[in-house]
Image 1 (cartoon, rainbow, N blue to C red):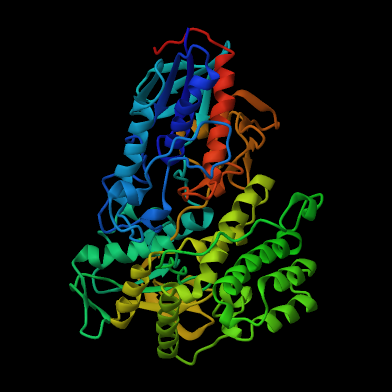
Image 2: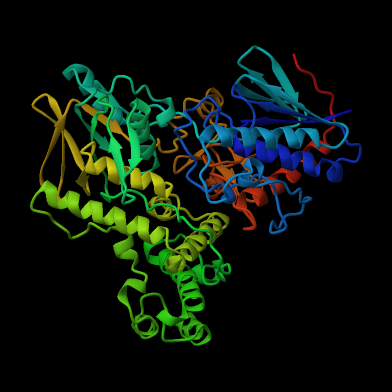
Length: 585
């Protein structure tokens, strides 16, 4: 008799789950005899988002040395540690470089193949290049119906589809209908590699709403992707040479500035001693208001990480030693008079102090008399960001980012999430490679990119889209509007046939747009809040799974590994207790 598990989704989350299932099988299955069915229409490893057939122009936004899908000695889990190469080691290239998306796809495929090849004898992995469209209860297990007409019977199912498509929001639907009636162009949210960009006109203004990673991809595809070139001047300045086929991109957002670039140096300092203050005991009993109850503890953690690096790595820029500062800092509440006095005493230079308000909203309270003034300010802002993120003299910034990663994991473990903090995390810690911001600056100097400011509003006026910001008077009109951001998770608007079928029958519940699970064991909750004994879910679209999105960093006890290992062991134990005959019809 063989135990049997289905993993729906073969992207990074599904690949990590398969690796952890194979790694734990010998320990938890006495025989062992196990069939693992991996279901995804896209090749395993990269899945859809990280598929190989993307332009080489699109890069990872993490350095190759910061990407791994292999466990290491830092991971605290019950299952065996199975080390393997980071992306940088697998590529044999610059650890501080940024790999292309196709190269990352190759690495993920390698991880999947390695997990299958090193699985214990008796563990068989079957790849089904199709979609799972429905689930049904059968005695002792689950029947998984596939789009190709087959049905697989298994002991347990794990949903690991990752990011999925959704139907348009009501606002997007309204804008799309308006565009159709008025003869305008409108591109809703989506992955840049999936969008049809051929209809975006040449040498015409295009309004772009969003300045995060989706905009960077869009910018690359509409400039370098249309034949433009970047060259280095004799003084080292990057210059853009247009092809003549680019649009003129007018871009703005709520903040009005792009995400901060990734640090362009290898961090040599000690890991910051966090988490320390953000604990369930400190939070007390919920429910919590994030900005009132949670943010002060989060901010204290981030500042602790920041000042630890500043004081220990750059002692000439401070007036207190770490032990004295640590004692005083731990005793004070965040932003108390005593804490502000301590920081002023320890850090004499204002630029060395951490200012979250200015970091989060750099354009707040700033008004320009004309567009030229805003463009000059933005050119300087980008130059400062590039300089600061490439200079190890500001390694305290990197330590704060490590603190953010730690805090994000703690919040996930506590079941605390907040849209503002998710956006702040991405803006500070998940920005583009430095070279991309340098290209953005060159495009702005060439007139191909124009910045519109903060709190951007877009409406329809006199047969055209019109964009305005309180940052600067005036605005811009265009016949094309692009939403440069990814769709927000939404179970209620999901188009995945399996999610839709379970949702419509009430067998799957939604919380804040995410698939609802019992966080202790990742069991799927139905609309009544009842956990299913044979259905599980993990990934960025799942409650408690946002912190596992993206990729694990080496030697950081990554949450993805801990969650995947714990879930693999639960599901293996479940399957081992069943041992009923399976078939594929």
